[in-house]
Amino acid sequence: MRILCVVQHFRQGWGGAPESIRLLARILAARGVSVDVCDLGKLRRGVETLDLLPEPDEPAEHFNPVTTGDYDAVLIAGPWQNPKYVKPVLKARRQDQPLVYLPRGGLGRIEFSRLRDIKKWPYFFLIERGILHASTGVVLSSRCEQRNQIAAARGLSREVVIPDFFIAPAALARTPSEAPPAEVRFSFMAEISPRKGLLPLVQAFRLLADSPELTVPVRLVIGGSIRKGSEAYVEQARSVFAEMPAKASVEIIGPVRHGDRPVFYRDTDVFLVPSLFESYGLTVLEALAAGCATITGPELGVLEFLPSHDRLSVAESVRPEDIAVQLLRQYKLALVRGGVSREETVAYAAGAIDAINAQALDSWTALLNG
Image (cartoon, helix red, strand yellow):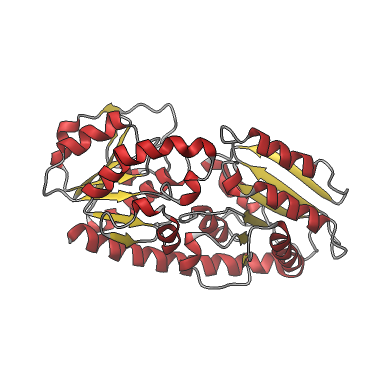
């Protein structure tokens, strides 16, 4: 079976949607599926063979929309695609050709919450609703994504919940040590914007720094680029950590490339995902698979597929007070059982990821063959 997947910015540095498509292609290959990607008029063939997303400047061949009918199915991954490239694909599609749409969280209510997001509504009614109507199925990553979609996007096509595939890279082990750590490192990695929850996280970290139970220094490392329009938000966060007490420090390191992530996770004791909403959340699986304790907000789709574990803490809300409770909890665990807990976490994540992939593989096979 050959599938054409239409996804914008299928390259490094563009978030979870391109990576989830690469992983989907890699795992579906075991069932005889090959995936080509159309990215803004460029074609990348056989992406199931890729170990990493392409570099931003890597060349690709021109895509001819007439060839759309040669595929067994068409997938459209992610909303707000350039109509110049997606409309010719829809026009060339055969009537009997399955069309599967993956919104990738882009039709969530939070995407329409800012004043500047008002410009999305005309596009939604002119483009997105047409894709939803034409689809033979809409694949949502979680029930969390499903319930957080705008009402105007619901009920237009058959909806199926299928978790995202994940392949864990090899975890880098730390040098074993019997001595207590000299510092507990907390890390955050995401495109920095209000929906990713950096400000309440920094405020929670300040509460941790002021706790009388803090006996070992703590560090917060912030990775990720700043989303356009979020500069003032970042300055608010900077004003908070500029006045941290001496036993707490904060460092902003900018974007973390895929090839640098294993070292990033190796050096992390506790990984933080305080997002207000994530349709799934692949970085949660990345961090757990690397052995990091992980703290999240409650509205992450991936949590539906993960059994409970001491090293996975879900804050009651993304208010600073609730996040701080989990920061202190994982801080104490890192002091008592750091090295042993990393090994246990890797084993826990491996079992959970195997179960997620098996469920997703069966669901995709049934969808594509049905």
